[in-house]
Length: 128
Image 1 (cartoon, rainbow, N blue to C red):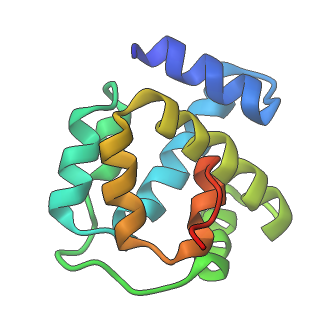
Image 2: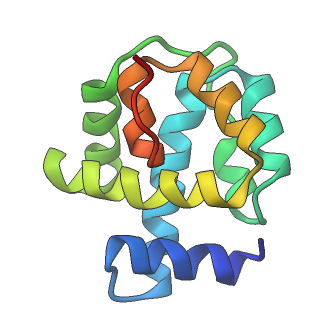
């Protein structure tokens, strides 16, 4: 998927005003995601996303941090300047688009590293 297609989908999913806003939110969500998954998984995901979004998946630390969904959303909110409820909307808009843009196997690998309640952020049902 090309960058313009990816951002158009994020823009539609999140009902953002502009492509620029969709890119800012996408970068914020992907940076937080990169801090939560292994560097190898981040690199695998980056390989399937268009530039410059792949740069957002370069982890700022060498080892993934362990935190749950609420902390994930708090960090997204901190990066975007939004409230937690808005951060959840933003995360869903971006991660559901990621799930459309990359292989199903890649999404499965991501979800294996995350708590079960992350699945719905990717537009999937939580495993039972």
